[in-house]
Image (cartoon, rainbow, N blue to C red):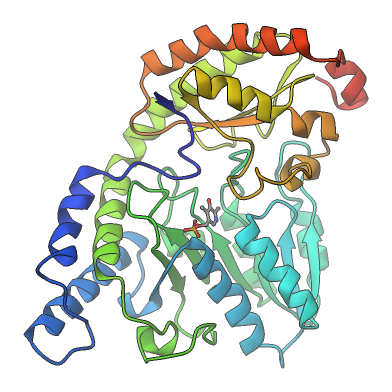
Length: 393
Ligand SMILES: *Cc1c(COP(=O)(O)O)cnc(C)c1O
């Protein structure tokens, strides 16, 4: 089995599981309980909060534990917009957000907010001029994804936060895909809010954290007990929180070395696949995550390709896990100006810690045959030049 779907989720590191196990077994107390076992659980949560705060270069009180990356995005965007609506009803985001962000803005439109969706260029980089020009006296929040989950494109977050600070607008970024490889020091980035989760960094599924700079007003989206300073009710997922702290520690320790190692494998994979006729790399060639490959194989449906690859034990994905069951073209590939022929024929392969050079060579060995077989039975016979016109090459 060759797992090339690390942007969907990663395999938990054994050291992470080891740290979690006591909190799934004998240390099962509720952090809110007044007795010894409650204190033990509370200490585990607060210790994890301190560790994560150190890694992000913020205060422990500036972190809120949540149940996922999706929930952190929702808390940041819905929580901020609703809390600050008296100051203005205009919000800005990009056209290439993860559904966890995009659908928050769709919800806010229904609640009467005005949203501006900023364009990206054909490489997937957001238009900073357009962003700056879109800011009005009514703008309260900008949210832009740090590294895109489908095409791996990395945005210049410090440049965006400069613009936001100059205009006194709060900024949130979804950093779920960036955490393994990129700078996540919130002071260096200049972000006011930042979302990360554990399932993308070799930690457990079902836990996220929201960094919220002191003084950034948000209101809860979940109501109940007073946990997380009243901003996220519900008994803390102690084991997952402990696991997340360990996963982040390992991600930071391994980040640079892994970036270099995986980056080389990624380039080997891209170069090999682009040798096949009528193929195209989607997203910026260098401003992209070291583990992301998104390629279109013209005249083939991405889904058929995945099925055949699956039979050969190669597991990849079309764009995002969240949109792959729908038939509409990916909003991200559409936003980089690509027609549906390119979108429907694209697949995403995302490398990870367990990926070896042997894996990549096996994939490069198998893909030409798979692609050829599918093209033989395809009724389509288009060329990139025909489909893309001016945008080709
Ligand atoms: C995976 C992911 C999410 C959602 O995280 P969950 O923990 O699955 O809810 C949000 N944003 C990005 C960029 C992601 O990659």
